[in-house]
Image (cartoon, rainbow, N blue to C red; front, top):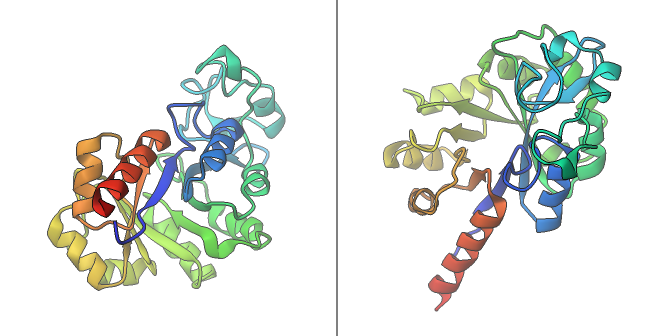
Length: 249
């Protein structure tokens, strides 16, 4: 390929370690991914925690809503035993822990989980935390709650924001301007050639999710996306390296 396609590990990669854990993020860094996607929510004691579901049941040995549990209560849970006994000691990490681990070694896509549970004021809290991160130029903020992104953009207009959605905007230019977005994160089945061309012409980088099959990798390359968000970073890296060899041969 004559251009770089960024490899983003979805929740740190879900095939080799429990999602959204330091173990997953560490493996991503070891592999040399370009970026890591993660999800944040606020727990009952106010910390921003890295966790996907509103309910604790699927990816921990806890129960109930994460918003109702304190930091200390969450830290007593295992975030890895559901995946494998090997990861029984994994904890639900705070965003601060992840920032310390990554420290600019990879791009970060931080998705604000503000639906269906609404975290009032989470945007201000996230800004306060991220103001101390010295690699803010290597962070992209996204959310299905586009109001959250609008609020973030008011507070820090120079940061990187994404249009995260299933489907494509009717008017890409107006929608991107409304969110101050430089990135477009569509569900991969919904992106098509016309929308991809429009985004590229506007200078908007396309990072589709969650792409796990080789036939879909190939279609994303045909659409000239800027990067691909995948659950399986090893599989995608191998595919991209194979394409490079074939193109150079």
